[in-house]
Amino acid sequence: MRVRLPGGRITPQQLEALADLAGDDGDLELTSRGNIQLRAVTAPDAREQLAAVGLLPSPSHERVRNIVASPLSGRIGGLVDVRPLVSDLDEQLCAAPSLADLPGRFLFALDDGRGDVAALAADVEARSGTLFLDARPTDLPATVDTMLAAAAAFADLREDAWRLRDIPDGAVGLARELGGTVVGPRDVPAPPGPPVGWLDQADGRVTLGAAPHLGRIPGRTARFVAAVEHSVTITPWRTLCVHDLDEGPAETVVRVLAPMGLTFDANSPWLQVSSCVGNRGCARADTDAMGAAEQLALSGALSGRVHVVSCARGCGAPPGPHELVLLGPR
Ligand code: SF4
Image (cartoon, rainbow, N blue to C red; front, side, top):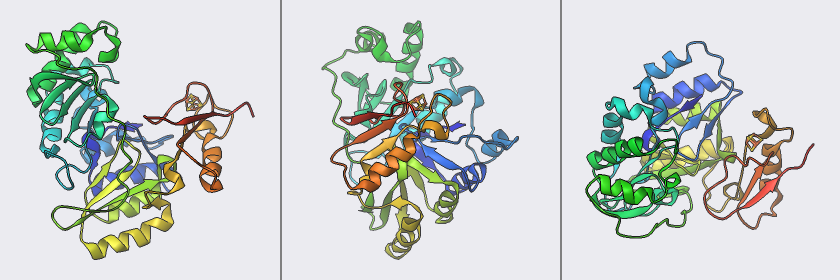
């Protein structure tokens, strides 16, 4: 089950519901689009449980609610606060019947000017007020209306294309459809390090950035995060942020959650390694990619970014430079 979280935002109540569905033996898997996946869910009324906490606002549009946003926007740095845009874009996307047929891989991004989610090269992106199409700047303003108009124009042009980059000169054609023009080459910034550790907010409060081992939060740990009762953002770097904490409670949160497998150290080797699920959840795998990745993280021998996979399909590879470790047959 993949649960889409526009902008990565999730309330404590929603997080608790997902922790209940995962159970004490299951994990919440964070995805590279800031969503959450659960495997082997057995609750027959899982959809109802999701709907009850607002995680399924539009069943017809569930596959297309792919919106990433700068996770620290409005709290720390950035040029604009994109949080209101996330809500508007999601609501108006769900209200447009024709956009329910967008491909599930089509991605919207709202970058607040720091160039973090810009690194994901979304199909339609708002970057510092400018509309980018497939990471190419245009002379069009980035508003909810222009972003949705761009998505609708893509739906008309796409034939069998999944992403704008699959259409030759797709960005140029799309800008023309919108009455504008592309004004520069593709501009994809290097992916930043994930926001991990103690992060001071502009209002004097604190955001805690935490990295779960291999991007998976055990159900029990997720229940503890929910119990903090503060806003949480899942980032596209498979980490999470707990926002708006006062200093005293923030120190308590670190003391409680660090022993439960959440890393608050930006230099931790756990931030250097990732893996596909391997034989712990994929029928194609006959090797333990997660186990091999865990050994690497604990070895002290990592000198750069490594992604471990059980087959050549290479699922879950992080953006940016990394070494791919393909496990041989068992
Ligand atoms: S890389 Fe292969 S083994 Fe790993 S999750 Fe993907 S399909 Fe399964």
